[in-house]
Image (cartoon, rainbow, N blue to C red; front, side, top):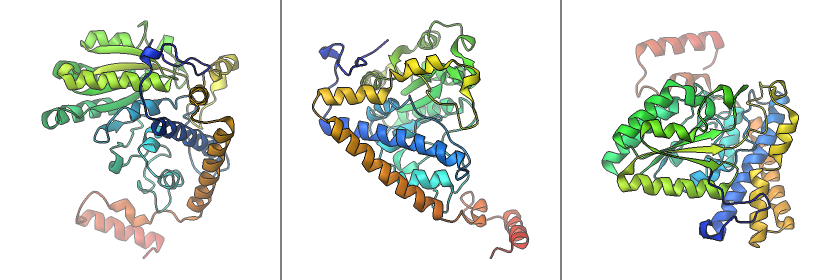
Length: 355
């Protein structure tokens, strides 16, 4: 398993430490903190009945390192818990929070489950609720990209449960045959909702599955942001040299429930969760930054307080805004609405008395 950071923030071997500018490292950390705070506030909002649904990300924030390894031209195909990649790519927090409230400024116009948002401006594709479908989308997009830009790669995230889907087989098989510049990242958090990994596959690791498709495979410490960055950088070089895709198994843990509709205490022991809290990717990275004299404990508190206040303010603004107008149900598909949809819109107006 590729690993760079120890739990105390020290480096296992200085020879494998990636060279990254201080400002960039701080951006990673700030992105992780924003993601963690959104997670904490998202579940409270759902329990208060102010938003309808919440998807947990706590424990999987190190995926930001994978996003940081990409160029802006590269497309990201997320699963459920890769909001941090959008934050890293500077998607405004207000856009994410407007989406959670499905208000009139939600760029998805209330059509998506809270947390399943996309943003074309930052090449961040709408995630899909059905398991694994993004795998074949990413593979096809990468195949197209390979025909026009040899430098472009696509990255796709999915969970361990998705490796049992037919789309996983189709995507990796096609990618292996045609050597598409796709980086497949399995965020192996060890539970597909309540199904543990040992009941998901008989393979020793998810990375082993790469062998059958004739592609490169590697297991990475998914709670180590430097290891995630380093692995994806190598995968990019591998693809740009014409060697095709890489399957990265990011071994991590979902410290919260699957979603706000889940009760994880029914299928995993509390002791296991407490053990993984000691491997918290944010705490590990913070210790690394302190060792490098990039932040202090006091500065760390200031960062948290800054984003905590900012997110709270954005939540109050988003919560006060109206919902999207009903007419948006009929837009964004046709440039000119066909008669059938115009007729339906007239019916909606009749029953709702909306002008």
